[in-house]
Amino acid sequence: MKKLLAVLLAALMVFALVACNKNGGDQTTAPGDSSAPAENTSYKVAMITDYGDITDESFNQTTYEACKAFCEENKIGFSYFKPAGDSTADRVAMIDKAVSEDYNVIVMPGYAFGGAIFEAAPKYPDVKFIALDVGKGDILETAVAAKGEKYSYNPDEYKLEDYADISNVYCAIYQEELCGYMAGYAAVKLGYEKLGFLGGMAVPAVVRYGYGFVQGVDAAAKELDKNVSLNYVYGGVFAGDPDITAVMDTWYKSGTEVVFACGGGIYTSAAEAAKKAGGKVIGVDVDQAAIIDGKYGEGITVTSAMKGLYPATYDTLKAVIIDGKWADYAGKIETLGLVSGDDVEANYVQIPVKSTQFADGKFTKDDYAKLVKDMFDGKIKVSNDITKMPAVTNVKITEQDQIK
Image 1 (cartoon, rainbow, N blue to C red):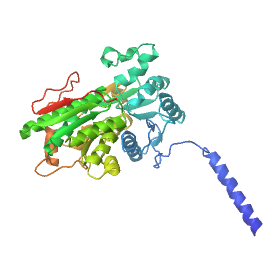
Image 2 (image 1 turned 90 degrees about the vertical axis):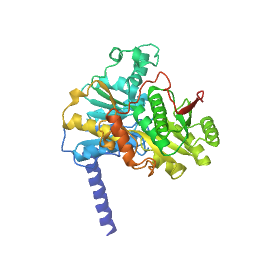
Image 3 (image 1 turned 180 degrees about the vertical axis):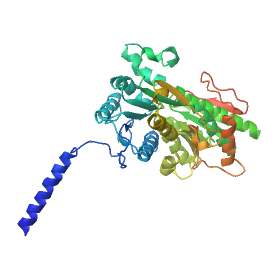
Image 4 (image 1 turned 120 degrees about the vertical axis):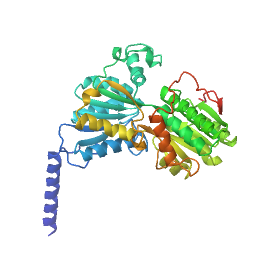
């Protein structure tokens, strides 16, 4: 009996090995493959993470969820690929791998893909590249250096076509000043009078967030006929740092009630200080309430100034794959903002309805809907000028030197 069982077990192992080899063996496909059968075989969608994982509760996770939902609903093959390291070479390697496995729509979230676009897109002219939050300057930084020139960090000084071929790339950037305005307006309406803005590096997107925040704070203060104060600083890095945390400690101990932490992982410094002082934080890019509150304490996050990565990803995939409108997207860098005055969650810039700490008699969901409607209709105008601090009447702004 034992011999018979051994023979049967061996036979099963051989059968499994043959079946595995027949189906591709030990393929290194991403664990995020869509489980839905692919009926639309003309397209296969691959998402490349910037380096982080799809559970980062930020750019990667939101983009992944949008791609996966779209592909499952439309029965299109989908996988995500995570680079081995945080470099352009690692990201290009994953693009190469995805293309070698016949993925012909590549979705990439975040400015870090600028160099990868410059290097990979021209190699694969038949592949459609969709880049979220990647602007002209992100591509130029690598492209200019490749010509042996020094980049001035002013994209307006260059013609992108003289340095890079993005004819098969669609880039989406965002009107950060609009959601920055929403967050600042909401904070003051909710009763906060001593605020702070902590930016990462003073790159255009972060400055637009900050200056929009300033304008929203001032507008709400005017409506309430009160004067408020605002500390304003850039950390010099997109990460938390003991020196930055020390500055935040000083802010909160001196009476700052809420800080808009804007720039990658720099929110950790604000959140650490807020936790110790009983202060509050405003998140950025995505709804950060879950990650900040989960780590630092329930209720710390007042709201978040969000880029609508999910609708932007989903809508672009639909337009390109289902509607066949790639010609309307290819080679363009488009700035996304408000697309609806009635559906606040359809917009590409917003604050989160689910986690914003709305309060009756102060700032409610209806108040937010009215704010968005007025912005969409042009009754409220928000400047995107980042050459100088916005003029204010009801805010005392204290600008500090960059920390790092």
